Amino acid sequence: KSHYTVVIVGGGTGGITTAARLLRESRDLYNEIAIIDPSEKHYYQPLWTLVGGGEVEAEVTKRDEASVIPDGANWIQDAVVAFLPEENRVVMASGGELSYDYLVVAPGIQLDWGKVKGLKENLGKNGVSSNYSYESAPSTWENIRNFKGGTAIFTAPNTPIKCGGAPQKIMYLAEDYFRKAGVRDASKVVFGSGGTIIFGVQKYAKTLTRIVQERDIETKFYHNLVEIDGENKQAIFEHLQSGERVSMKYDMIHVVPPMSAPDFIKQSPLSAENGWVDVDKYTLQHTRYKNVFGIGDATSLPTSKTGAAIRKQAPVLVKNLFAVMRNHPLPGQYNGYTSCPLITGYGRLVLAEFDYNNNPAETFPFDQAKERYSMYLLKKDMLPVMYWDGMLKGVM
Ligand code: FAD
Image (cartoon, rainbow, N blue to C red; front, top):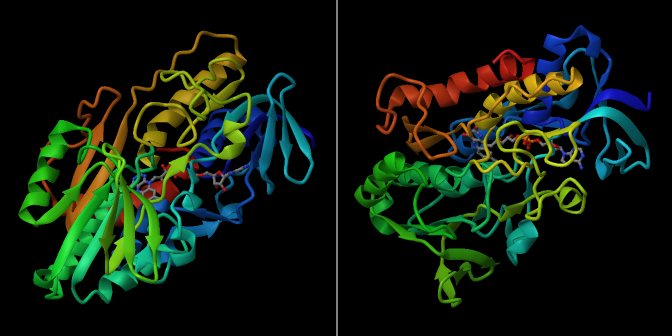
């Protein structure tokens, strides 16, 4: 079959959720949806923070891609390399092509490991780890568990990233663990960030600023990691205001790599000037191609890139896609909702939820800026179940 009513690029959080919702709402789409994704596996990435913190085994975050493809959708195990939106076609790495009536673009964000010199070579050794891949997240726990004092650095790049809070969540877990292990007095904990502030939403930033002070964490903003010298355990930052190179000795370092839109999106006619899939921020419809929609991390939506955001984007996209099919005006409006479960220690969590205007958009009837055990359990035990059994089935 070389033509589908709907072709979805990417079978991650956004792609699978969209497919499941479309099929739930229209029997006509049965066998009329193709999901193109080269990956053998589907990952629940939000738990990688707790893999790095030693709370969860990596294996529980991974399932076969085949097992998450909804009934009625066809999985094409291939990678899209080019878009021909004028001709309603996509080209794949195998050389094959698919044509479509409607296209949904959801290939996620690209991790630019190569942009930090020495990072790839040292990942998983010389005290260097990252929760941002399935393979390297367990090494974070190894480093935390074996830390005997010294300097522990946690970095954040100066690019957009997925889950803006993740660079600091693992820092709070590590700091907490160092206290319990009796090595905190002999250690320095540093947040080396290419950002300029601790968090973009005032309400939660207040809590985090207090936590950082109380727990004696040194924050270094405008510090963008550019190089790791693994042999000498030196992290080299570029100071974004002075342009100076600043070298810091570390004993363990958790690195969040720079990220950007996937290269094949940047090079395509679908991209905005900044590389992301160019969609309307309210309707998720492509700004130039009306039969094309985008969802998730690869899009130009000016909100924090999370799975929680996709949970609110998917119903809007599906509603609007059906409207385009019927030649109706688009009824769905996404307000930028996103959520960041900020783990602040073992058994403690601040559940940040906010919209395009950085106004809190909270779910619970209590002050979510307070650290809570209940919210930690929500993150660790409940959200994964809601993900696999709810969101990916198109019911949440
Ligand atoms: P993904 O789920 O990443 O899926 C993209 C898919 O596209 C992949 O399957 C990939 O194989 C496929 N693909 C790539 N290139 C191609 C191609 N050329 N052709 C076809 N397919 C392609 N979110 C939260 O909501 N809460 C959290 O607490 C949270 N914590 C996080 C912690 C960490 C450490 C990380 C890494 C992420 C976290 N996230 C969190 C973010 C969340 O995982 C992502 O925002 C979400 O998975 C994005 O979904 P997506 O569909 O856009 O991309």
